[in-house]
Image (cartoon, rainbow, N blue to C red; front, side, top):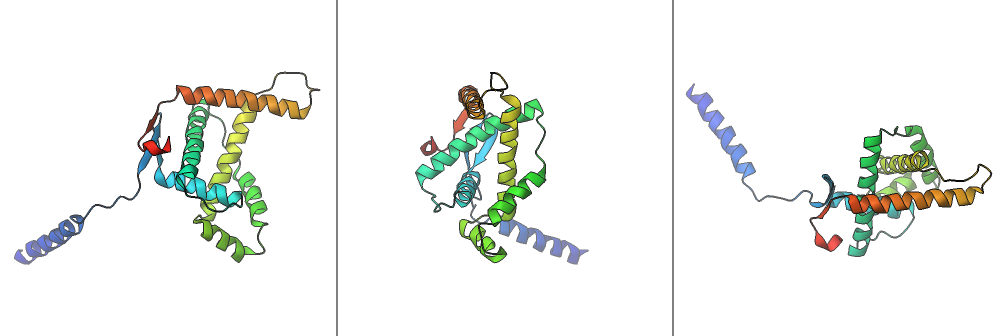
Length: 186
C-alpha cells in the first residue's frame, strides 16, 4: 500500500512538473467574424496555398497577411450564408480533377511533393482549399442569377452575376461583426 502511494505521488509530481514549464503559444486568434475564428495559422495557410496555386513567390509580408485576412473574412461571411441556406457540398471528385490539373504542372510526383514542401503545405490542405473554391462557385451559381433573356451573351451574364455577388458580399461584410484581435491586419 505504501509503495503504491509513493509511486502515485511520483507520477503525479512528474505530471505537475511537466505542466509547470513556460507556456507556449501554439496558435493565435487574429480575427473573429460573427463568432467564427480566424487564426494566424489560417492566414498563413491561405497565403501558402494561394501563392502555390498562382505559382507566385511565397510572400508572408504584412501586406500579404492583410490580403489573406480580407479573403478569409469574405470566406467566413460566405460560409455562414452557405450553412444557413443548406447549400449542398461539392462532390470531392471535382476537387480531385482540379488537383490532377495542378499536379500536371510538375514533371513527376517527386517534383510535385517538393513543390508542396517548398510552400509548407500538404496535398490534403491543397485539396481542401480546392474543394472550398468549388463550393463557393456552386454557391454563386445557385444564389445569384443574372436578369435578362436566355439569348443574352454569356460574358454579360457572368458580369451581372459577379456584380450581384460582390454587391451582396460587400453588404454582408458590412453587416458582419468583425473583431480584429490584431489591429495591424485591418
